[in-house]
Length: 460
Ligand code: GUN
Ligand code: ZN
Image (cartoon, rainbow, N blue to C red; front, side, top):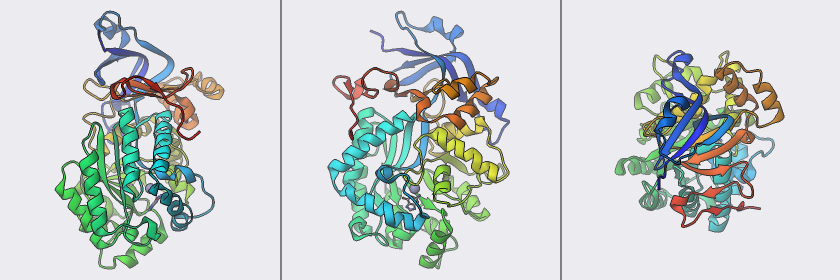
């Protein structure tokens, strides 16, 4: 029996970086495409008329009319434990952390609570069309186990790690340089490279780690191949002033991390709103990436990320897109793009739809050095896909009818779209979320469960 699958619909992909080349040369678009999937991987993607003859006998394509098939979205910066305090009123970063974040995160000492929230979080990611995310857990190792276990059940490619904090947070959330190192090491042994899971060394940000802890994070990176690093950088003026006080010997906030060996390939710095030219140069030279988190930066009033300065072709820095939930206000990368457009507009620049969708897919994959397997609809790429419904709401359907180009349609989707516009999500070739399926929309893939299981929401 063949295990081949095929999807038919409009499709987009990328063949270049639209921040470096004209957008029209970078977007690949087929009005009527066939995506052929075998063993969780894309075998072919191209015009239906050309490829339909290559389908094995008996394989009937799943048809998605009025939809766009694209690579699954990548969320390069998100905190799963913060789902329970998303949309908390009234403060800027440092007060927001103390008032809401550190309170919520203490509950993740309870593995059962962590499991329930991880279950809901994974479903909300998939409902938003996001198939890979770089995720902060809490300081508790059990919060990491809970997250990876749920990601593994869906067979989703995820990057996550235990938060490291050894000062300036409630006692219940502190580890120490040694304990943080030991617990991270044990989690790396348990999860890094298991199935599609990747471990990420995760010092929260410079103010909550001593120099000894940052050095221990650097040691972990040196001792293991292929680890990721995530932290926060230059998000808010008071935070930056505090870092200057805590690390008076360092030339800049980024230099605090560089000194500990944390700035390199597969390092992802969240926010980077208030950067100097030298910081951009350092990231460019090191191959480090920045996560642009527009809904968060607007919500906390942190400032406007200078996207076009960051990617300046004279010393381009890799930039990915992050939701930063719970400071961010939506897990939908369509909503992140909606706000990214406005942030760019406020800095006198225009983010076109090709650049926008590139940021949410291939750009994210490049920033994570996963662009050999994620971000494109091409043979050999993971079949992690998002199916966007251009008629998801009455207004979207009405407005889409007036679009006369794919760029126009993509722009309207990112302006009006959110999780309602995600018709289905595929992970390694399996349809794990189908908005319109009768009964339960979510399903663990056949490959990772003895029998297909429908999934009631873990927090009902
Ligand atoms: N800086 C340090 N921790 C956090 C966090 O949880 N969210 C945001 N937005 N910034 C941070
Ligand atoms: Zn964050």
